[in-house]
Amino acid sequence: MIAKAFLSLTEYPAFRRIIWKPIYENLAKHFKINDWHFMNYGYAPESSVSTVPLHPKDEINRYPIQLYHFLAQKTDIKDKQVLEVGSGRGGGASYISRYLSPATMTGVDIARNAIRLARKNHQENNLHFLQGNAEKLPFVNESFDVIMNVESSHAYGSVPRFLSEVKRLLRPGGIFLCTDLRAPEGMTLLKSHFEASGLHMVSEENITPNVVDAIEKEDTIKQQRINQHIARWMRPTFSQFAGTKGSRIHLDLQSNALIYYSFVLQKKAVVNEA
Image (cartoon, rainbow, N blue to C red; front, side, top):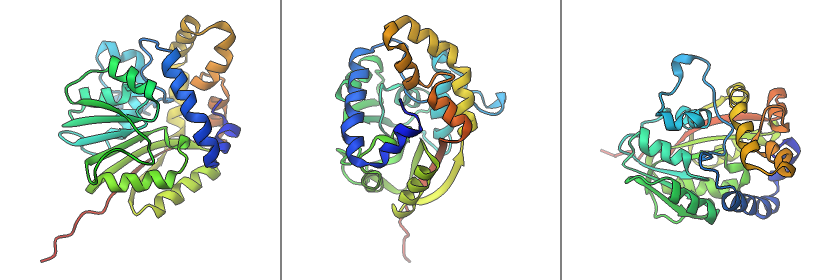
């Protein structure tokens, strides 16, 4: 489903607004699979030394968790006010809240059913979930130290509006962490949006090989989950959406028809004048 041709349509705001919210509402409403807490394609580090230590209950979601860990370790999360925009089923926000000790971890998603599912499955003292639109977020100015956005911006009607909200909500010196995939021309456009946002680009990294590796290593778990929980007639479509090995998304990432990047941006700090 999210192959190159489909993602190319995400350059049209009207298409994004029409298609994505119903998809995520229905996934959260009808597929309440107990161990399915993530919707990203995962990350496999190049060295086993970088493998994230996990509690046994989290091991089944190792590769999606590693994408969050890879991104989060690019700044200091501990004791910070952290926001994830596009929190989906809540697994990433839950991981951050439990393992990286932020003062608060807030997840926002446009899909009301996803928020209900996240609140049911992930309950920590420092973790909160709210329904909201990425282009008009329900928070006062300069509320957060760190904002995260994992594999979500391709679904937004206006990425520039979203980035304006990120800039508004970050405190001076605050950090924006982002991962996403695009066709090469779409990635060029995304980078131009970052350049025009008023945020400073700290780093960017092509992690396509790490994502492809994760898709391949996680395939057995995905296939078992699909075979156990998804009706036979829906499995081919669901496999494409989930990005199983051999799916269009997997093949397009292998061939670089799609590329996957991570970004770190920073809001300008206030300079005290003598």
